[in-house]
Image (cartoon, rainbow, N blue to C red; front, side, top):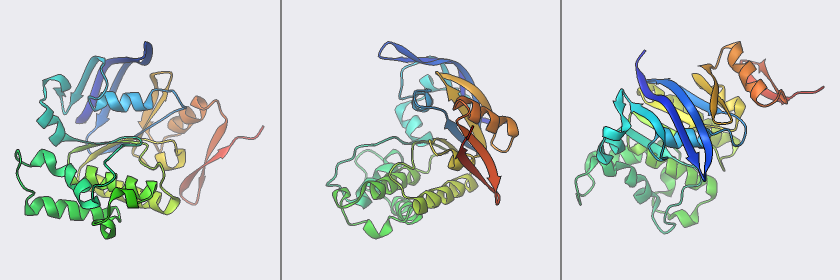
Length: 255
C-alpha cells in the first residue's frame, strides 16, 4: 500500500509537556483518515506535526520524502491546511480569501490565471459559498466563514488535505454538505486527514486513528468491530456505538 503520510518515532512537546509519544503511523494515499479521542489526547498536535506546523522529534514523511528536505513551495503545493478557528482579515472579500488557496500555483506577483479563477469558482460552489463571493468575511456568520476557509483549502487542489475540527460552527445540513465535499475530494484521489469530535461523522471515514495521552491506541478501518471497541474504550465506555438504518449512532451508555 502506498503511503501519503508516515511518522517514525514522532514525539513533540508544548509548554514543557509531552503531547506526542513515539508515534509510528502510516496513512494510505487516497483515503480519508479521521483522528478521534478525548480532549487533550494529542489529536490537533498530531495533525500539526503531520503538516510541519509543530516542532518535533522523529520523522514525518510525505509520499516517502522526509518533510525537512521539502522547500516551503513544495510543501504548499502538496498539502492544504484548514485549522481550528483560523483568523483571516475580515475586510477581505470571500472571492479573495478563496483565491489565497491558489498562491502556491502562481508566480511571484503574478496575476491570477483563468485556471485559478475556475478553481476558486468550483471550490466556492462546492462549499455553497458562491453567492457570497462579493461580500466580506465580516458580513458572514462563523459557520459561513468556515465554509469559505474550506473553499480556500479546496482551491489549492493539493494531493493531501489536513482539517482540524472542520465541522466547528456548521449546522447539521452543512455538516452533511461537508461530508459530500470530502467524498468528492476522495473521488479525485485526494488524501484527507481530519480531526473530529463528532464520532458518528468520523465513522464515515475509511480509517480511524484513536488517540489518548499522546499515543495512538488503535488504527484501523472504521467498519471493523475492533475500531468501534477502541473508540468506546478511550472514552471510558461512557458511549456506545450502534448501527441504525445503515448509519452509526453514538449514544450515552446506560448502567
